[in-house]
Length: 635
Ligand code: WTA
Image: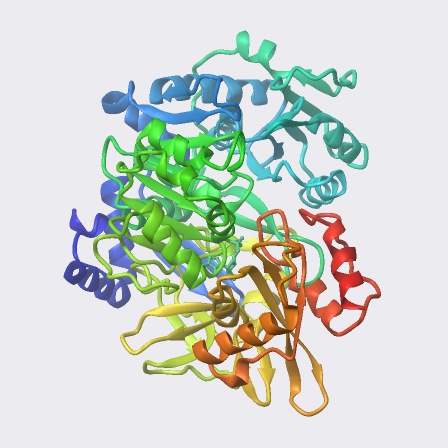
């Protein structure tokens, strides 16, 4: 059925139009033809954004693991489902077939059941990027338990907050993890966290690094001996379409992390459909997403989306610079990767290194390059396009959020003509709207505004765990009857979307709205600049002025800083106009980043306005010590 796999631009428009004119029948057709249901739905969609309440495929019964595993066994039993590439390239890769995946998921599911986990119970998963991580998600889904993955880089306090918020009964973790030439003792971190969590009854421990760890009597157990005696048959729990599948925490601009709740059928249908189309995946190809499963990108596009399509998905345990900066390119050559999906922050780090690292590897297997998580600046886009894709592999700049469950705006490779820094066009079923400050929709092209979505799509989060009011306030209150993304976007003359960044990052200078991302883009064009971040700070006359934190490629080279500042402003003037010039430029050694690579602008804003008090919780930063260094430099 062509709706499921779009093959040319004309077809995209046809499919898109159909999806908007009649969303129910559009999604119903896809759901009918491409998935395995225990019972079909009574109603495709009911929704009311004022409550807000959204239900897809109500009345249907299914289990997502039967769709991701069991139904492939007859035709793809021996096909590799997961390629595991370990941290150390000297260790062998693991190739897990669909039938082996089935056995391993069922065994773990039986272990969970034996430990008293039932449908609806929450299980926290805190594991490195090893096969057991993907298997744990699927084992929970098999028995109807709700998984809550916490990225295995978060601190014990962050774990405890998340476990307590959703009252997890169990934690699945490991003795430790490898990260380049370091090992991290995960179990110690979990122990500290779980000490503050009375709800946790048991902790299952995967052996990964052979670390000497404490096992708390009556609570902790090694997983392997339990798996050794478990049966490889486990009947899948029959789930209702709207039964919860998982919780995943995401940080808001203020307050405690939000436990976004995703449900079963809609999430499955949408992630499978978008995986197929956004990556143009075809049978026997090898797909690699370098994100961690601890983030939504990993949930949707390492585990559920690929496996629902019977794809081969690669899990990489390591880091881009171990043993050296050629590691990513080596993995692509070794496994003949066809689709590669990564983040701009990784691309910029890789682009700073010598091209030799890239050039010694054969990257000719690549067909599609993906980008996700933040706006990709023009320089990084071109570097990725020229050196990795060799101008032959389309770059898909995929825009979406933890809350949206799947990709909402993205080119379809070989279908949608790409344009650097543009996420281009909505996926079928997605109805974006740009809004002005007065709550009116801005029609037409060559406009910019706040990005909203005005019609439900199957994989949208249904609530924030335990706080439906906050869900309503955060996403459905800014604009009437619309989901507000928190992002700003512009629509160019042909209707392509470019995400300009969080609206809270927009700075109004002399009455002009300036997105920080395009200015950073411009600055990064300067040959001496490695990376930059712009924030607003109060200005007597203009209201706000711009402050730039700039990392230079060569530190301590003694270049004339005043000259460089002038040149940077000249570059901005050339790319955007004098209105976007920076009032202050500070050269820094690093930028405060979250573990997912996002710049913590909140901190930079305070430093820029010389407010050095109370930075809030910076313990979850990747590099907390950089804050003091920037502050010292700002004095
Ligand atoms: C930003 C990641 C520009 C955006 C899947 C969004 C992007 C937030 C892009 C969600 C992109 C994500 N271009 N910005 N292609 N993709 N973003 O929840 O601000 O970690 O609101 O989900 O990242 O981040 P999250």
